[in-house]
Length: 245
Image 1 (tube, rainbow, N blue to C red):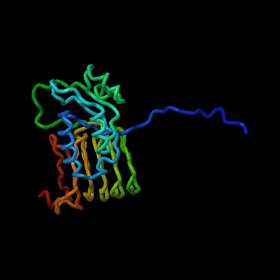
Image 2 (cartoon, rainbow, N blue to C red; image 1 turned 90 degrees about the vertical axis):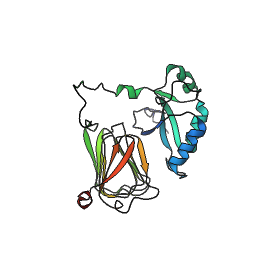
Image 3 (tube, rainbow, N blue to C red; image 1 turned 180 degrees about the vertical axis):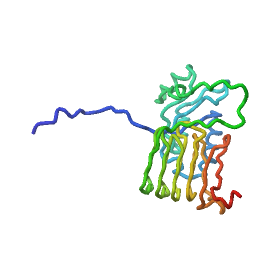
Image 4 (cartoon, helix red, strand yellow; image 1 turned 60 degrees about the vertical axis):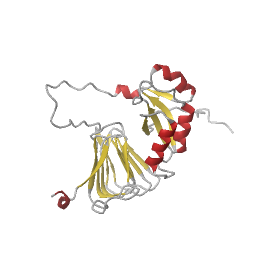
């Protein structure tokens, strides 16, 4: 039997990989473990084996050397798979690479210098990352992940528990939102999440998370709502006209 010689043993193609940012403000392992334990609330599959990019820009300039294998192991314990380090100074790079991580230099290219203004604006300027819209008309089942790259995401069917929807822009769900929704995945802090029936397990805007392990307040559960970022806080606001008046 002749073998198909046109078939190569391996092919390399560009693929889209979604990763969360693990932004360090402290490198002490005990402090990090305590923070992760509090964040996850002891839920074993809180992060569900996400890829993670470690961001060290927030660490103090005078700090002890980072034990990279220990840090990688700690994140792995909480189902975060570290793949790269962002904003690493040159003196860190050798140890990072020796630990099997990559150096992420992509984020710096995305920053744009703000336009000069004569005075501070009275309100924040809305920045749009999304240039298009992805529309999904079918239910998103548990275990499914939808990613709208450089786009807003519109879903007209239920997002079930255990499902994950991600967009670089805003997310609109015209049905019950019961899974995890992550908007502004590329860092757009102006992105928002809108749901016709708010029942989410977790929401995120530009990497800032909020979970609802204790459930939503009765006046918000199952009601139309929007999620937006206010500083470092995730706000859930009612879209019910009676609640706003």
